[in-house]
Length: 192
Image (cartoon, rainbow, N blue to C red; front, side, top):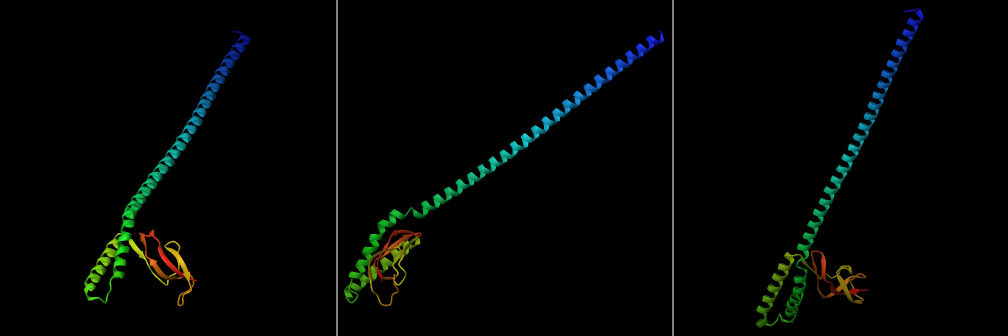
């Protein structure tokens, strides 16, 4: 082999080695690029998974809160139903109380023959009022208290000594509330 051929052969070997090295470098670069793309995709998928978990947690918390709100609302509705189930029945009892009070007013307390009837009516009315009070029915019949349009209905206004302006002077018909809810307003005379 001549020196020229040997140079050409060495150059060819060097070129082949360079080509091989370049191919290996390119393959390594390609593998690095694929690895970087895969790592980027993995990070992206992990981020999506974390976002999905957050969304799922938030949805679960909202669902729990909604269930709790519905439970509380139902408990309040049941409580109101129990509290005011007697409203219609109570309204039917008010005329009976009124009639017992009128009967008491009609009896002459000085007449010995009517004393036992008077005592019976008083006991009946007292036990009746005690019974309805146990179920939340309260009487609105105070005098010398400020007029309250939520529980009083003014029939007239009068000048009254010993009363401040806008105070109840007289109750013509008692009012009643059921657990704080008005059944019937008290009909009253108010001071000017």
